Image (cartoon, rainbow, N blue to C red; front, side, top):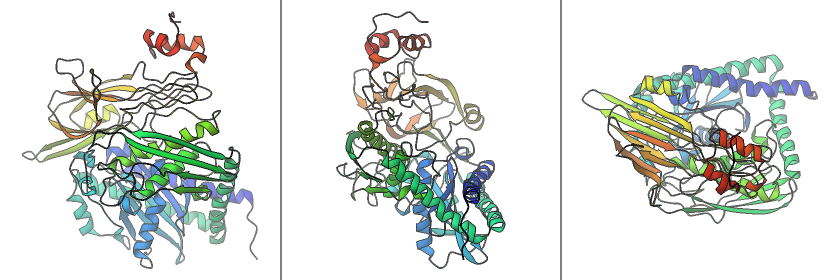
Length: 570
């Protein structure tokens, strides 16, 4: 007769699942060689039950975590009964559960006394995987082959021994081969950490109890998610928006969502959105589903254990051969950055009508990636590096939006300027909040940034910013945040807008690659402000005065956005 699972034991075991992934992440960050992982924290670790259901995660990258089960399933399907203890599968194929080629995933099965009990999974954004542009970031790609090496599920360790020929192939297809061995060891360290702590847990509480806790964790989160959905008003809510362009064609791309709430279930239908486009803002199904999940998580039950139980009441409809569900060989790199955020934006815009007392203005858009490549074959130099300058979040029903805070889908960190300057031939010359960038409102959006870098060597540059044609929308009467732009040699005779709106109001795509920069050139990224919440005329006059004093807004904005003829700063 099975013993009843007591709530204290359940919570201790369930929380240990998340603790194990935290230990995995600490191990990965300490060992990894790539700055984008150890400094910018662009990685994720998770645990799955023996049926590939997510059971534990830590506070890593949401767009990874809600899609990783697709990779676990792909690994299991590829090897079926030949996935053994000590084996590790590597893959990064966006059409097999990946998000984009740069996100490399490792999966290993965990066996207890010869029985499969769980899977451990580690995913990290690597420095470069080849392709037509440095950091594999090509906003002008028209074929996924241009985005770098694409790995199907393949064993990279067999019985804990490395498959050296595969590692050699990976090394030979990157601009940064010196990172590969260290980053592989970092992921293996994370998986070994998962095995160590998970087996300690099973040894302490027993296999039967741990399996029961995995099942109950999923059921518990499902119950809490259904209860949260039941608190939303039933109805059908629709919103539409635009992606600025696809990097190839300078035309806005229409996207649409319909959210249907019916008692304890919710359906997100992306029917009506643009067909697959030429450039790399397409987003494979696994990533689109991830955008739905993290977009909804904010407003359902943010404190419920984050596992696959949340997915059960959520139905996702995505027609094939659309920007949200493309077919090979469509390029997809920036789908994981720009389009994933657009999925969440559409859901939030739908919910504005349903829960105006909880919704917030739209945040700045995506992680605003900029990268550089430096090559000198005569000296044997091959470097690639980049940054992710954040923008503002939207105003809320209870306060102003956060300034310059990383995006919903990423949860990453800035590349520390001192670290960047130590490693690469670049100087960060300017980093300040952007006055007048926030969308006005009863509670304004957060501020974007103005960030400048000076190159000390000749380099090529890639940029893939969103929300440069249309700023982040406000809600409930709030105004839109200001859009983004890219400027070369700002403040000099050679100043030139190379992305965003020019002085004569011509729009240039903020998506380009292999742009030549000379030693001594500077580039400035102007990031987006968040959308406002509520009518600007309802903003407290003292808050307006304080914003003026702190240079959050200018005197012109006081008049134009808030309707005040003249204010004296506090």
